[in-house]
Image 1: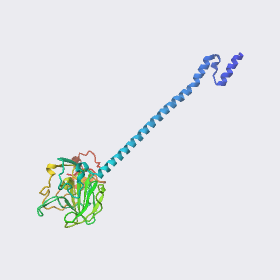
Image 2: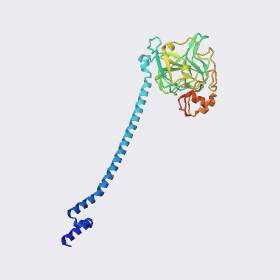
Image 3: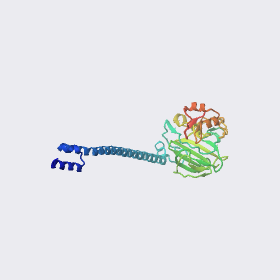
Image 4: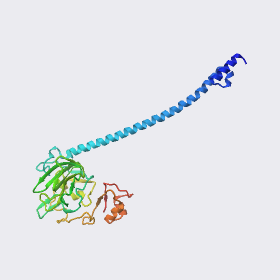
Length: 336
């Protein structure tokens, strides 16, 4: 073995080369470089895949944050819009000059009453806990005048609540009529009136939500006993509350009620119900005016409703087109 060969062998051993490089010359060194680079390439490929997965995860996280931000922003905008609507409820419908101290805001004025208008009744809240009607809406022959609301029995001091969200337009006293009373304008176009209160606990301009207390029951003004006189009006025109709401069940009769100027443009001079109003109790669902709908409350089931109203689960499912037994709280279900 020559001296040169020994030097190459030593160099190979020091650098970690295998013996085939002894006679390989430059080719051997080239192969050794390729061999040494191979693991580095494998590591680089693995690192590349890991980096791609990391970038994908980052993108997904960013998208998730953007989606959450947009959702929160939309909720804030919706809340701001709702608050703005409550500050000036139905302003486009009623106009700027209708914020008066009269129950009919257009009394003695010309009003641009629409030929028809759809009133959303979703979100209705029963004004009082007790469900006992003592006098219906309609013409009272004995007194020669119209009764523009529905009277419901209560005890002095019972809490009276807002039927819908809105803004208090009137909180006043009228000795010869309503006594202590409150008028609220709502975002759905309606105004509701609450008469004969013993006490008002809101003032003009108060923004209220459906179900907020607005007063205490009483017998002030022209009243023969404790009761709530409840009116529903559209642009000053009185509507029969029982056309809009089932005041025994405490639920709207329809999701949306359509006002027609030709039909509702003036108060009827005939009673909608019998001349003498019958007293209807909340614990008697099988009264003369059979309940048509029920507003679903927490804990209600098809079985409990069927038992309460003397029907069957199958009949309720058929009436309401239900394929399952699931009920949504706040929605109305047909009973008959």
